Amino acid sequence: MLEVEERFMIRDLHRKGVSISEIARQTGRDRKTIRKAVTAPLVREPKVRQRKSRKLTPYTAYLDKRIAEGVRNARKLYGELVALGYPGKESMVRYYVQPYRQASVAQATRRFETEPGQQAQVDWGHFGFIQHQGRRQRLYAFIMTLGWSRMMYLEFTVSANIAWWLRCHVHAFHYFGGVTTEMLHDNLKTAVLSRAASGQIHWHPRYLDFAEYYGFRPRACQPYRAQTKGKVESGVRYVRGNFWPGLHYTDLADLNHQATGWLNGVANVRTHGTTGEVPIDRLAQERLLPIAQRPDYDTSLVVYRQSSRDCFVSYEGNFYSVPAVYAQQRLRLRITEADTLLIYSPEGHEIAHHHLCTAKNQRIVVAAHYQALYPGPIVSPKGEVSQADERLVAQTMPPFDAPQVERRPLIVYEQWLEVSG
Image (cartoon, rainbow, N blue to C red):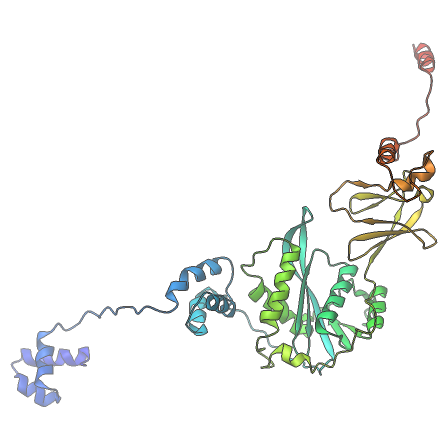
């Protein structure tokens, strides 16, 4: 094919009277080519190529919808398209998504690898808010990553307090089938109460007791050096980029059900980019400390409350009755993972138990707790409470600690009026 410069030269020679045969001899081109160059336009319009029907074309509407929902992870999108019947390659999906991805700024760091069973890294991630038990609550993700195999555990909660910090650890231990000898995390208040200028750490006593119970050594990152636990930091980003975008769920239980399915079907069965192996396949070589020989650590939340004169203790916006003999005393409350509220006397004896109420401003009453305040049997010999006695308690029980007001005859007020007049 002649370039435009050569066609121009041929046309110029022809305009000067040089024959087609002579131009062909001088240029070494065929006479048909010279004749075509002379008669055809110098600059040709580019041919409009018919676009071939790509395998991805029927799925671009779905891709556009998912990208609009925030999903820009090509591997996640490729997996979804395959489930829909897409016959093409992942590279085409990557090419399509690339313009929507934001370039990340790479930072140099040093990678530390650990021996099997040596270390697990733990972190919390904040994932916005969720409607839970009738109110809007913060949503947290607990993530634990085993340093050697890269096995991951993920659980969503609406609290990051000490009780849920420990509970999620226990759940992760059961998921992995054991515990590592070291646990690395940030300077969380549920783990580190304070750190001296010398570097000495003042640990949360309950977390230390938990660590001793399971036989691992807690380790906190240096302040402002979160990259020390880069494996779990990458895990948090992986959850945000692969599991979270475009996710639809009905409640917290459904969210955690989907998280477990994602762990078992995606995160822990993929070929890891660093190790080049599948995390679940490496788990058998982790040599974790076993936990099956001992019962689970008691992860109940423990708080103290002063009972009121009308025999109630308050917790999370509700009021729960206690036996009348324990009115106006400082009592210990233990809230279990099963949402059971256990109340203990100052001597440490269990005196009441309730199931936590999810509504607010409620009074949860056990009529037998007022046995000492009312004449007649409230509780039958079989331990049953009659409906009539329930109504008696509800009608006569003061709604709150009302102040004591002296009752005076009206004549006293009339005498005061005469004096003031």
